Length: 100
Image (cartoon, rainbow, N blue to C red; front, top):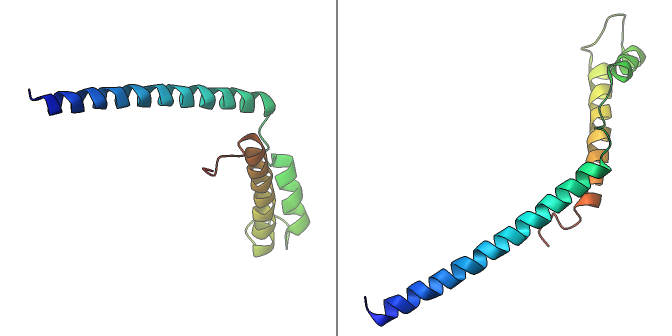
């Protein structure tokens, strides 16, 4: 094998070793953040059926109504609020998740 190929192979091996070290460090950081996040989050925020039933009873047009636009918009609004809360919590836990 010519010397230039040997040098290139050695350089590639060094670069590979460095890349493996970097990946291992990133994995450790990711695991630490995941553990930290799992400790902070006590229980998921979910619209309980009581809450859903209350929303339906408040916005229904007639008794037994669950499909009218008023009810559906109210339920989606509630879900949107819950998602906003969860996203806010995510950005607090992972402030650099945008890649910067």
